[in-house]
Image 1 (spheres, rainbow, N blue to C red):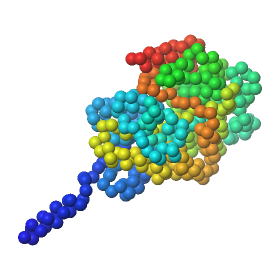
Image 2 (spheres, rainbow, N blue to C red; image 1 turned 45 degrees about the horizontal axis):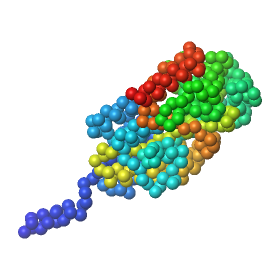
Image 3 (spheres, one colour; image 1 turned 120 degrees about the vertical axis):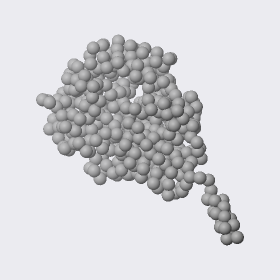
Image 4 (spheres, rainbow, N blue to C red; image 1 turned 90 degrees about the horizontal axis):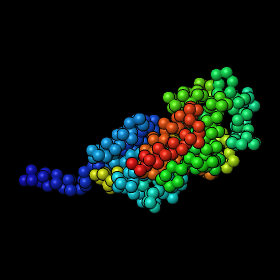
Length: 406
């Protein structure tokens, strides 16, 4: 009888325990930010007993080859990071779950727009970046340069940027980081000259006078005026200009908030942040964002949906903002990011101001990355001065658009 009663109690206990625990996997490519996510998910798990979130990182160098292999094998993470160049194919081929979250009105609008395709939102903004100037204050003060007042013009009329970076270039120090870095450098010049890079999902930068002028200006900074490191060096080592800046050998380093921590760790001089130079069309910054997307292959849609909703909340992204890792995709916690850097003595408002003004969208589309990869060899030749700009852009565009059709 006692055994029977014990069995009844055991069965009763099972009946009220609810469904078995769920494990949701979350994948990204940045180990530093992963630490903030683990802190975030620790709070989530306390509020959602029965759901465990496993964070895994895959290095950027392997991310975009690992992801399709995981999808094919059925081992893809339930939720994963994506960028604009790659998400379109996953959305168009039914690999993602659409996002319908009332919190979206509080998300960073340019990033929401980037991940809206066919009238449907596919990603929850996680972090975003615009472009500004990291300034070696010791060097610019010595040269008498005001970085916030710089203007560039391909015609030369009213151009104060080129004279300034010439003054800043001396000995082993370069004035500026002109390089084949589209997000941080080239596209900002194209946008601030009124040029374009894409038309819908198609590349259309060749034959556009304002685009050609802007790229020519950047290439001339390297090969004609020699105010930037040789392109051969920066093409081989994508971190070359960051390294030069933290070593005190680069006066103006145009880049995004994704390098704030590296500059903080490496710089042994006074530095701050200033707006990018204004062009004929004003200051136009590239705005890019990383989103969290949910795999359509997830085995537990309810648990995955809860994790995705958490990632779209202020509490979910607070550790990223409060730790100064990145500008968060939830507007309400942006002040915690700026407060972190204010405590470090750095005013990061130029990044926020850049996003609030005219912006230049990062390329998107189902084959955007394939197109960018196909264009890259020709752009490398252009930046090294081995192909004329107009001819090189035409070849790059033809190769990119051919890759879109394959």
